[in-house]
Length: 91
Image (cartoon, rainbow, N blue to C red; front, side, top):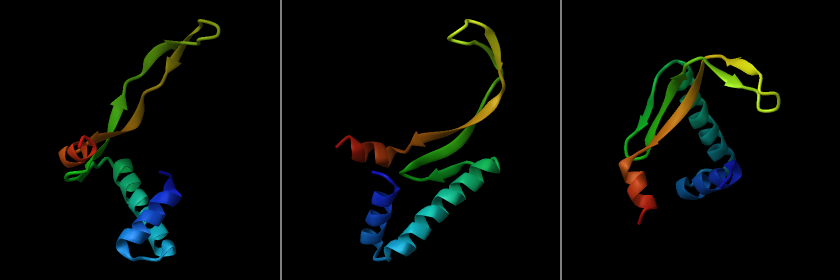
């Protein structure tokens, strides 16, 4: 499922127009992104949780040359599935 499919499904399930459903989907993604950028977690009971995990700086190797390179510290978004979603998928 891509974004267009998601917007169509949200439109069908909610009775909204596709244009309004597109705005809702965009606003949802923007709200999650803003919360994660601000250091907050997003917990959707039964669905799952979005959080940010910190990755420490480390040393790696260039696969072509074997030369050692420094990989800087970074942050990565993470998703943990909720119990209800996990059970729904495993039916």
